[in-house]
Image 1 (cartoon, rainbow, N blue to C red):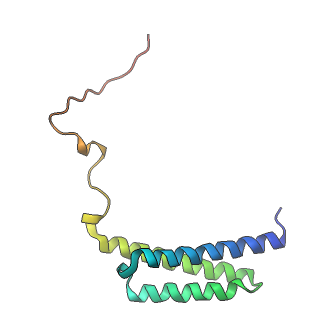
Image 2 (image 1 turned 45 degrees about the horizontal axis):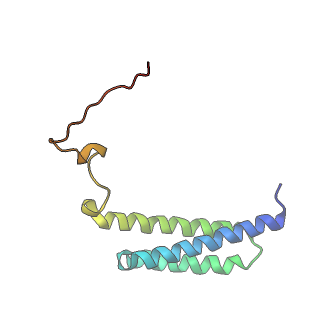
Image 3 (image 1 turned 90 degrees about the horizontal axis):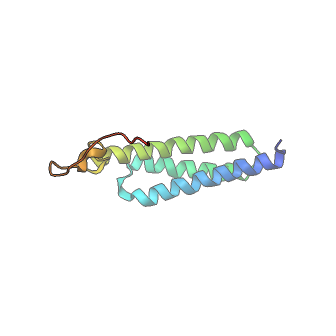
Length: 111
């Protein structure tokens, strides 16, 4: 069973990780992040930093959760801006096989 101080440390650690992740996403994506989402991330990181120094466990959890939701929105927006040409490759794993390849599908039997 966790003690109160361990839980408090864990919440602060999670909050600190959320701030780091949010700032890294902004650095990595740069201009791809819409201005409104960028300001929401900056406000969220500021709020988490402020509440991290308090003993308000519920406030830390709530601010961290809100920041994580905004970071997910940033990822969604960046993915949508990338479009299909920069997104995931189309087709399945057999896409690389051409008509010249001699591929035989069979079973292995041990005798």
